[in-house]
Length: 193
Image (cartoon, helix red, strand yellow):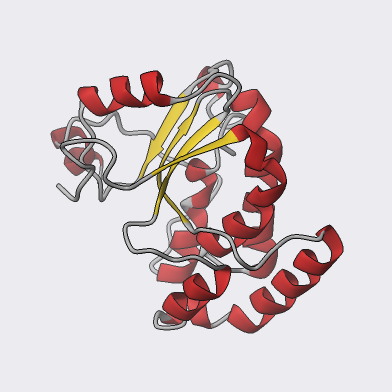
């Protein structure tokens, strides 16, 4: 893995708190450790960073994209995130898509139960435009951490790696600090390499 990562231009860092797993559901949940910035204790050199860009391996992001994100984020916004490329206007749309993949479907009953309970208790909505968590610009990491930690802990509590469902629910309370952009706002658009 190290050689492949370094050949692609990445600096390899092995996360030791999660043992390697060939179970796709477990490894998908483990990936949320990085996505939702839970690694500061293990990698303290990053703990003082105010801005971090997270991206999945699937996306080709160029320097021009980074500059665009930095310029595009509005004052007072803490997170910049994209809409999904396909219009999904409710959490149910994301659930329906997720049921087609076993790693998501296996714990969907408990996820739906948690979702219904959380929406009711917090007076949140099922209707919420789904965001794509494959590329997220964290403009102000300390202010973003309460949401990120809550999403991460919920992923593990539910054993549900389909974080877009959890994000769509919990992010509603943080909507004032999240800036949404359309998938194709930037030209060239973010795409698979």
